Length: 181
Image 1 (cartoon, rainbow, N blue to C red):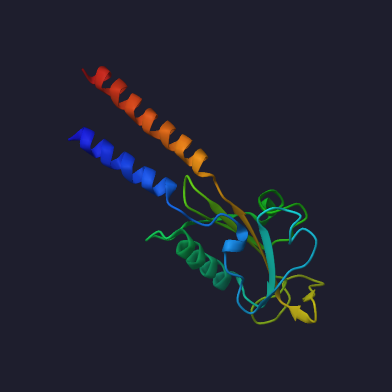
Image 2: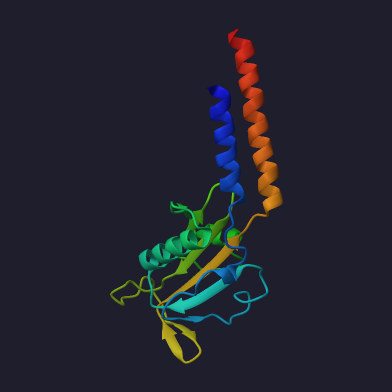
């Protein structure tokens, strides 16, 4: 009984870990009604980073990328959502990233998508800070800027982690049986 459960768990975990998903930031859809940023650091200088100027606020942006990440990963369940302090954007996204919120969408033991937002104005148009100005990109003025950074993992790394998890569980089970006998 325990052997069958262990084998089923191992097989399901392996399927989860090698299941195909997005491999780069360009696999994700651009933010609707937005302009893609052409600022230095938002294009090709930092791998797997994309930024968009828009009038979309946090709830819409995070929900949009949660759905997009789920669709690209083909899982029947959404990714986990974590909130981080905005100051962490300098480490998670890139240096000198302005931020009012930073969220992480992740499938554990697989990939992470960081969603960073700069919102100098409230949704009603009133400024959050003294000296808040609209963001200028091209010919448009925008209320928000969203920066994404994707951290994919390789299948080789996932399989190595899977082997480590399964080996550890097996050894713990063997040790537990010795201790109880």
